[in-house]
Length: 366
Image (cartoon, rainbow, N blue to C red; front, side):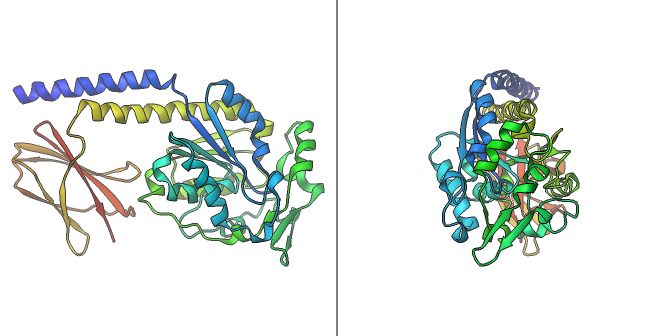
């Protein structure tokens, strides 16, 4: 009876903390870091920057090497150069950021998140390349039979850059954008470095895979067709997918809706972060470690319990939070053996609850 009362009290405290976190998160402010796409520069975010800033959020727009007013040496630019630019920006920020990538920027935020997972609160892909490990932008682009990108570009192999035809700019990017932004863009678009487009992405579940992802799909897109966007976010599931009624550049054509989506992501992201902090505060044994011994075939797992239990609750999840196994074990022995579930996840999180204690550990699979 005493154990039941203790457990009930703990649950009530955790719920109260969680509700408080949900209320507080609505007023919390986020740091948004925005990464532009091909041919563009940090200038492309100016309308969205104004909206997010007025809402009280901090906004950092990264200008990628070889773009915008920094256009030079485009033939030498690599994916590593892009990644370094974003990583350096992350290193200068104290708080975790909501990292937003548009179009090619999706590739770059994935690469940067792999290097600095502890600096990224969530990843947002805006009509962007959401690639799997080993994929390149070209690998996905060649599958897009309805995109206007290929008919509208020419490759300068000697200088390793890609030119966008001036007469096709509106058709590809700005068919629904205001005239004034089209005039601005025509003056500021620059040739795109070729090398990053064919460079495979290198990411792991341990780093990149530990971060929540969101996708904003553009249903009138002529650059990355909606069916290709869906193919990507289906292959790499996201916490939530939002649809926006626009072409490829909603930061010009539908700023209010894009702004509202990002504000909703901010609220949700802050709420999740606060709940995690509250649970740790309510349960001081959150970080007690389990001793885990996978067998040589990685098909089963031995869990060494740190004390005697009348009953334990066992949960195994992937790095994405997907629950793959739950079990209630009465009077467990000192070593509990379980069969590992079939999953593609390379890393599993094992949680054991009992005697008002919470233990967890990680299993790396070959």
